[in-house]
Image 1 (spheres, rainbow, N blue to C red):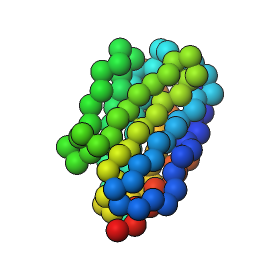
Image 2 (cartoon, helix red, strand yellow):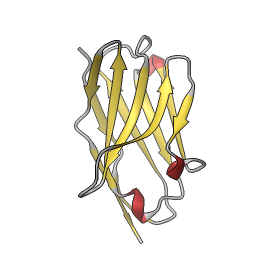
Image 3 (cartoon, one colour):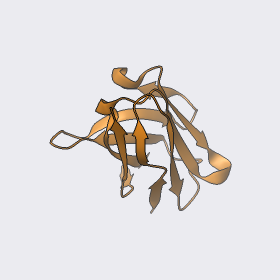
Image 4 (cartoon, one colour):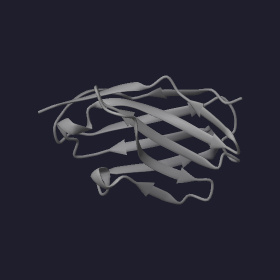
Length: 115
């Protein structure tokens, strides 16, 4: 079992930056994929960024060049650095961990970007 706790959300003006953190209750060293998802009001949850156990990253096209996902295995934490934020980035952001057949989710953190 892995518990995930997100933090770092808030209200920011367009063009600003936020860094989200996802703290895991146990080592993430062996977790295959750590992901950030987001869900805007009235929309489906979408995968924003992924980092593998080997450090390979992938991003949805709409955030490429603006968002950076990283992991600190020593701190059992995954980060999402978000720069040049836009109003359309407004959503609840969720951390997700995939370990074998098991999926784990955090409770989400709200990001609101004012235009």
